[in-house]
Length: 222
Image (cartoon, one colour):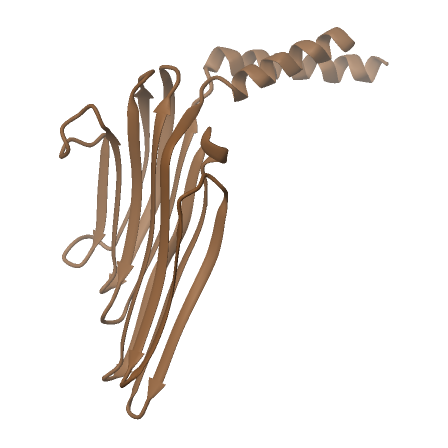
């Protein structure tokens, strides 16, 4: 029983540690600004470390015949610099009269893949009114305008988009993943949710499933 358990643990760790996305740089920005007459409210933060991030800012301003409000949020993780990667959030703005508002939420992470492995990039983005969202995954060895994936929604474009795509990331290559959402100065809203995760090898997953069944049967006999 102990031997079976040890084998299962080894397989599980092998699956979880099949590759690392080694962090190079990370920059998260969220900001919200609202204006009404001479009243201005602004909140912003920049996070350059590999720590988990989870913040929401709301700015509001009111004056005679004018109001403005803005909200920006983001929840993101880069696994303390070793992956996997995920980011979700958005930006929204609203106003009345002569008020104005703007908001932004962005996530950019540059990393090196330490092995050649298959990764799944999945996400969904949406925008309305003055909102815009841009997402890309780029191999820095390629020309600047040649992305593995590029998606954008917003003014003059489709309002929503989603995708699930697999990419073979190359060992020693540096990659840049980015999502940025803006809204304002007119009324608008945006949202995004992206993830980049390793795709386990089918044979390994079958072995793990088989080992789990053996453990379960052995446990019932005991």
